[in-house]
Length: 402
View (tube, rainbow, N blue to C red):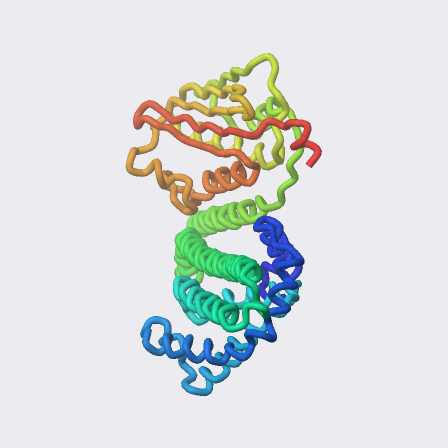
């Protein structure tokens, strides 16, 4: 396997698709195979010219760090590459070796532009040699064969470039994802440390008092034990939030009716007497294609946020509407609203406008909705309230079957 995410089979499948797209034929393969022995004696000269050019270009030459021994190996490899170019055998092994060239170039830090220019130089050299062969021996290589050879060779090198570019994109994407994962792990670690340090410090202070106080009264002991219990509860909430955040990747999309899910979400929230809820929906709502359990988590989070945004009471308006191929669910409150300078950050992990908040509820809601092929947006006016709107795809018969 050339890469953790790309097998040789997948590379060859992609290569066959590209061959079909450009119209590659068995006749092209046979023509280049026949020309191979006739042009092979020029390969060493072309490779020498190629590396003389590299030595004159500092940006390309700097990736060659092994001196003359490495250059000698690279020359042998390039001669072999040229032989394979005229082998007539363009199967899975060939495609994988071409793909690995791009993979290796990313590893050594060679900019893709130099690969393109290098192949352009080799392409020109090969075409000059074929043209010279026709000039010297027109019976050996007719004018018609020459034009066909130019066409086949250009197509084959373009296919090589496509595979190399695919390898570049795959490797660079993998590197970018790795960097993002490391950044996210750092963000998660920082958030956990921040959220757990406060309760642990409080617990440490109370334990110190209980261990060192001289004849503390029963009331004092009770106060500190209750204090410790509260802080353990806070730490447990942090762990629970992280566990729920981790579980959201288990996705089971099926068609379901959204209204019962909304009622379940409302029932799971403690709604103070000062807050009133209203649900508005059309008589007929199409089934939604999503993970119903996860969508219930999303709506529960949004309703709880609306409740917490209205410490003095108010109205929460839940509404459902059909927008073409999506069902729209809105949660509107009359609460404190979100400051304009914070609204772009509220769905980032560990960002919270609450004095006591883990900052994972909204990021988890956003991730769940997007994993279910939907999207979520928020609008808010400070002092007047906020509206969170979720769009979920309608369950068509084709989508349901998949």
